[in-house]
Length: 132
Image 1 (cartoon, one colour):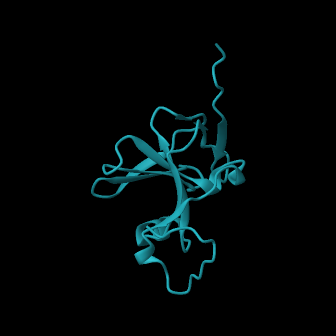
Image 2 (image 1 turned 120 degrees about the horizontal axis):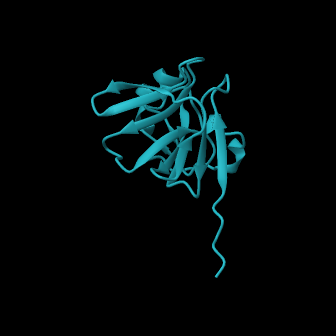
């Protein structure tokens, strides 16, 4: 019996010190519009990959992690400051990685916009994705 090979996608921070691998299909991919994510990334929204714990690993320097609000932590490169991941007690079985860090960001495709109620009023999207 032949075993199905799961695809592996690699990512890295700006300076390349923090690297990671995601193996297999993500749980989901979505654009997040919440104020917290906007502040953490200095951008109008960010795109996350929800990856099941156990199907990813850090392959370079370990990111620095800090609690950004009760029950939520964010990881970033200790050298260049690039955000690497988001974890929440609300999602105990997965870690959220920033899609823009992938070596092949085009290999994942967002499925929705989340926290659309916090979207900046000057963002006008025509991608047809649902707002959740």
